[in-house]
Length: 112
Image (cartoon, rainbow, N blue to C red; front, side):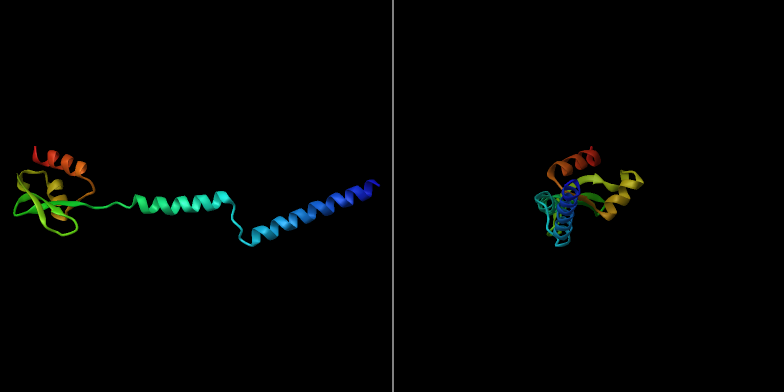
């Protein structure tokens, strides 16, 4: 009788293991995996930075340029020549600005 119970237990356990392996090989995803993949996709699209402005040098002065149209939005009276060399290089390349607050802070730093 003990052998019969042992063999039945091993058989049930083996069938359960085979069913689990077969299910996993079909590529079935748990609800946690599906939720994570959905979240990850949504998060990536929300994180992408959106460049609004470019701070750069034009005719020896600092200007604010609209990133989409390329038009000058604001011309400052600040001469680029009075700034440190590193700041001048950054302005020659163009400093990407992603928000109005960031623009305000950069203009305060450069123009004060």
